[in-house]
Length: 178
Image 1 (tube, rainbow, N blue to C red):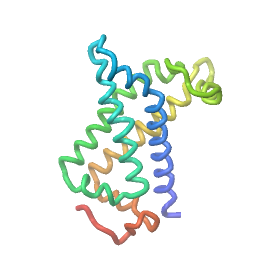
Image 2: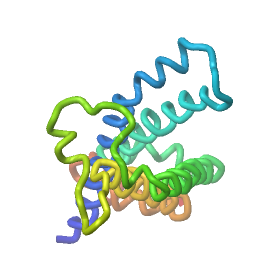
Image 3: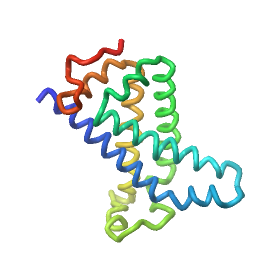
Image 4: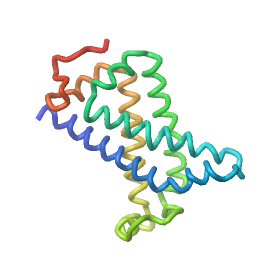
């Protein structure tokens, strides 16, 4: 019972990591275009940085937090690295939230989704408002969930001990960061 909150957090974070990876796969044509075509719009090449940080680095960090929290010991052992991780997560969460609330959350994706099942569940009508369920899941679990976890771990690295348990091979009597 004591671990139920931790397990719930792990499931939500892992769900967010999967969401980030899936969205990254859907964005691959845009990444390919940014690499192969000359930039026509200022900032178009920023898709590469966005892709590497949001769709590669964050899912890797989330997976490490869920499955092997001891791998994050080195990152959380350095104050500068902790604050850089938190700044990156919050720096991603704030603009992502603004963009989502300004429209992405309330419209279909601008690219075709693979398969009809995703297109069927993409939009949910709530009253007069249509909500993109996939984007809402991404915003809640990936953006806010990971942003909150990174910020909390930066402020209190000893919270990493709660993610460790018998199945992650670090146990409760493992290492202490501070």
